[in-house]
Image 1 (cartoon, rainbow, N blue to C red):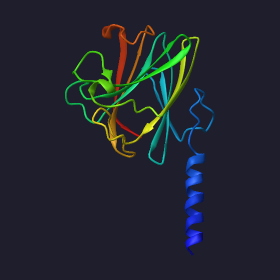
Image 2 (image 1 turned 30 degrees about the vertical axis):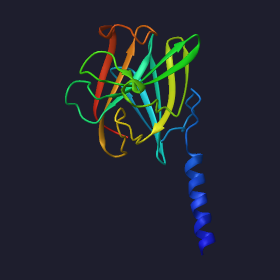
Image 3 (image 1 turned 120 degrees about the vertical axis):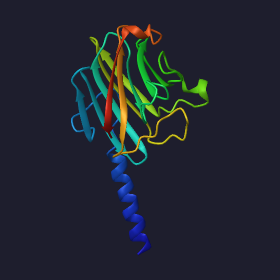
Amino acid sequence: MKKALVWLLVLALGAALAQAPKVDGKIAGGEYAKSFKHEKSGITLYWSVVGDTLYLALEGESKGWIGIGFLAEKTDKKKGADQYLFYMEGGKLVALDMYQTRRTGAPVADEREGGKNSILAAAATYEGGKWTVEFSRKLRTGEPTDVDIVPGRKTIVMLAYASKMDPKEEHKKTERWYLEDFVF
């Protein structure tokens, strides 16, 4: 009986791991469990939750960086947002895990606020102004600089992109959108 139970657990774990998207900067058909196209920004989100990990992909057009953020609730503009920014430098992806310390302005690196970079894996392709970014992170990192992602619970998702690859681009020159009541 115990052997059968262990075998079933091993099979279930293997099936869960087999469903994890491959973080390679390319989105294959059926790779992600769910998707959502945000018409105003033109950004499409893809995601799968596998065990305690969120696999997330963004596709969109931008001449500069592209980003996504999470807010548990909107109480003081962007203050407290968990943000992820992606840009190319020398043909290589730079993936930043950032935290919004003030209600407006640029976010800062998680490390500066006592957190750490919680991106487990990241990859992207950027061709002709079109981004495909994939990354993964734990649903709950245990850090005060990260928002817990709870499948089935509403959260605020922030989408953004800029006209330059420079992550320090003047904030007024970026495009931003809030998706309230988003559910992973």
